[in-house]
Length: 375
Ligand SMILES: *Cc1c(COP(=O)(O)O)cnc(C)c1O
Image (cartoon, rainbow, N blue to C red; front, side, top):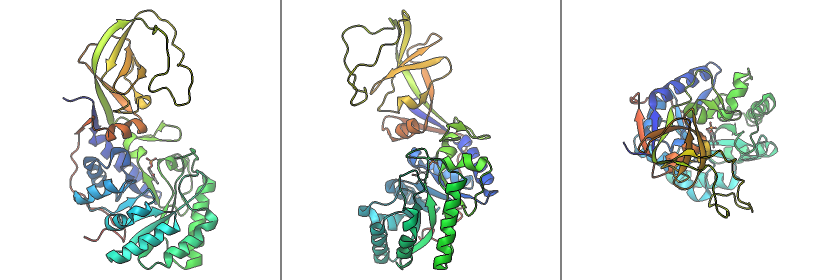
């Protein structure tokens, strides 16, 4: 079997999805499954839909377009606010997009009119993490603009926390989102369909008994894929945390001195701006060192967890240096548990094969937003 390869357990992913869908449904919350870390892998998307997820989200238009052309009928949410240069494709390919810029909304409306296809808009609000979002005091103005553009439909409002500064969802910012939704509804005499509270980083707040208020939607990636919440990297009770395994093959195993020798400078992967070589580890005498044919070009080595009894000593473009408390041999395969960043990079690398096992997902019957794609 080819290495490196990412082994994907669809049965575990199915379990994670059914579990989160039903637990959140009890709190009145629907989910959009965000597949950007797995590049919208069709087998995973089909697994999610079979597990009862109603809609699929991604940050990349290319991924959404290929899912749609591959026959996925579920409503699609573009979770990264659109590029001005891509509005035609956004309207053609996506039911609803997240938005924060007036100029983009106007361009989306013009594209929607040209195509004779209404486009749904979720307005993103800045609640403190300082990535995308309209400042709360500017929300009513942008909502008014959206409502005044006949080819746009204001589907709701949303927020994103946790991704830039690790700001957590809490009673204060989530209540603020609910209050903003109610203020818009009262002011413009409308009903907002989706109040999208955030991503996997919101689950800890909900699990701690947080009151969803008006929040009825989350956009989840990491929790579905890795079974954990991102802010504390804690496993979510009842979910599988090892649906993914990155497997690499050993290409050299030798006993070598544990200290490098010779005059030293930086390496290609020394952090930019660092002037000195990294300090050498203590001399432990001769040690077994194994090379895995796996490096930065295949995954983020800092995000790979080796099996018990093994440690990663270093990594470069194409090699991981590994030590182990047992004898290893050339040709042996080693499986690592990838973090979110390692998973994302492994999925993006053309050198990493993928092998799905477990459940093969059946056809999906999507629940629909009003704006689900017209065929
Ligand atoms: C990536 C992303 C998500 C999903 O985040 P997870 O932490 O993987 O759950 C949700 N919303 C937006 C806007 C995103 O960019």
